[in-house]
Image 1 (cartoon, helix red, strand yellow):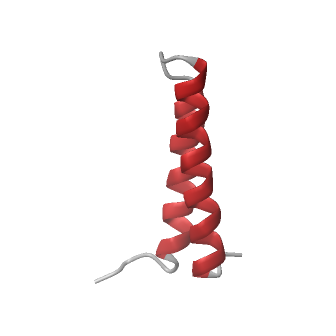
Image 2: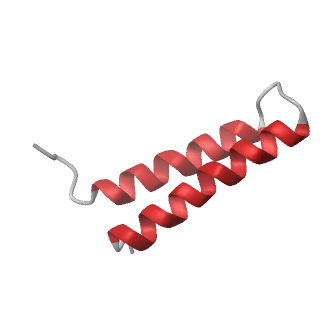
Image 3: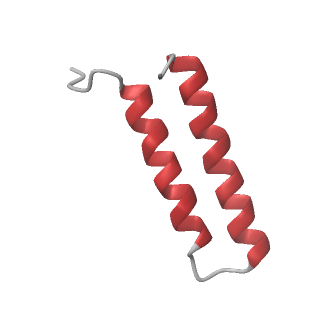
Length: 53
């Protein structure tokens, strides 16, 4: 059972938070940018597919 009104919106917000965390990680710049871009792509896809406003 889903308790969230819009689970896609919540997951998109979680991926945005993970993207920001990736930027502050103790990794090389290339790794941080790769992780950031991957999480932001997922967040954008969830917002588009889920119709998040």
